[in-house]
Image (cartoon, rainbow, N blue to C red; front, side, top):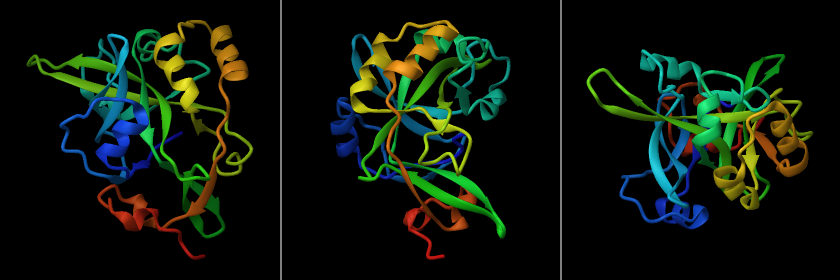
Length: 225
């Protein structure tokens, strides 16, 4: 699963990397993003990309209570087309979740060691996501998202048995606009033939990331073991 990530780039770099218009969001770099928090995602809107601030943890449009979102922070790519919570968003509301690293906890003899997983060049990337719009009983709208996961690549499978579905830049438009698959066979074809697994590397970080209230540069510093 993907339960924490970081996005430490500024708005100017975010706009340039993801080809979106400048947005007035009050955005500040984030070092330890946790579920239920609000983050920028990129959606397809009228044939172009748009930045939208959303809550992490998908609330299906049919949900009776928003609390379901805290349990839907990830969706398995292999079954996403079949699950009631995800199947409509998978078909019509896909998004890109900008990040520059994510965290996993590896079991060791001394306990669980947090690791930060990044691209070798430390550049930002897009995780494949789904988004929804939910209306609360008072008529307010909440936009929310989930992150797709799949089987891990060789570089990280010793850390965890799931991997965020990280897209290469040339695959991002296809995820937003081109993919119309709604069956398991079409999803399998995407994973086997169209998705190129990313190169990733990892390093240990402080257990400060265990607490979501810690959100500062110390969270991403390499830990000297």
